[in-house]
Amino acid sequence: MSKRLIERAAPGVRALHPYQPGKPISELERELGLKEIIKLASNENPLGASPAALRAIAAATNDVWLYPDGGGFALKRALTELHQVEMSQITLGNGSSDLLEFAVRVFVQPGDEVLYSQHSFAIYPIVTQAVSGLGVEAPAKDWGYDLAALRRCITDKTRVIFIANPNNPTGTWVDGEGLEAFVRDVPKDILIVLDEAYYDYARHLIGDARYPDTVSWLKRYSNVVITRTFSKSYGLAGLRVGYAISSPEVADLLNRVRPPFNVNLLALVAAEAAVSDTEHLHKTVELNAAGLHQLMQAFDDMGLSYIPSVGNFICVDVGREAAPLYQLLLKQGVIVRPVANYAMPKHLRVSVGLPEQNAKFIAALKKSL
Ligand SMILES: *Cc1c(COP(=O)(O)O)cnc(C)c1O
Image 1 (cartoon, rainbow, N blue to C red):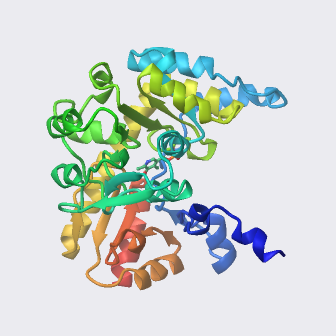
Image 2 (cartoon, rainbow, N blue to C red):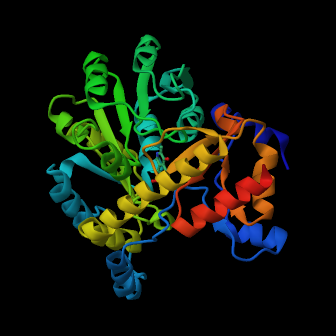
């Protein structure tokens, strides 16, 4: 192996620490020979995919020898109806992580700054570092985005601002009024990415009046990009599909760095079918609200504090180093997410599961404590 070859990797890439995903069930099975493992570690939908999406996948399997529609016409058309926007405003991604990366690749050059909050999504620093951008972490307030602090961190080098609303891993959120005041105040030549991966959950828990309808803002703010995903409330994480809504001009730029055929044929048909299955979505958000309640109740009973969440996950403060506890839970077949890499060494993030899965996690947690 040539040492010089390795050293020629782009500096940003060499300094990169790859994303650490939740532990797959199959890996824990191999390691511990356990059966009946539950995974509450990646905010997946415990009800699974919509039955309509599964039917669409089954009907399309004969076509997998064909390239997908690179323009994603049918899915985009369904999204234009859902959001009342134009086709030219949509960019499709292989998961919404794809779109976060496109945004940075389009607007960030080496040395430019990308701004986000402390305790926010791990993908933001990774996509920034990959292009030798400088990640800037604004201080958080009550574990969540502090928009005033974020505003103070804007410099003439800031190119992109990421706001996860609600935020992962903390489940915190910013209300519509405060967020719009922030957006109004940011210079128009800075791209603001509103990452709404947990939109449906948050909207259900908070209500329409206070959780912002940001798509309607696009007419006023041409520097806003909204990202959504089919991985969470739609239960299609394994297929990798998400999208961005923006001004046509920004969408045009995002689409230039988008690899051809980045969303596969099965993902396209499944996502299109999922959009119209409002019944499954409704069941999903109702189950989540009940599950969050179940978990919070249990934490209260155990005297553990937690960060109030409007996502499909919650961070509980275990009052001590959480890493050993994570290991003890694994031994009992329960996979959750340690969040020490988010500077939260005493918290564990648990995704809301089915009632019996939540109960199994609670029982395992009690036993481990
Ligand atoms: C899960 C998540 C995403 C999207 O993930 P994809 O599967 O790539 O769509 C984006 N942002 C946040 C904050 C998330 O938690």
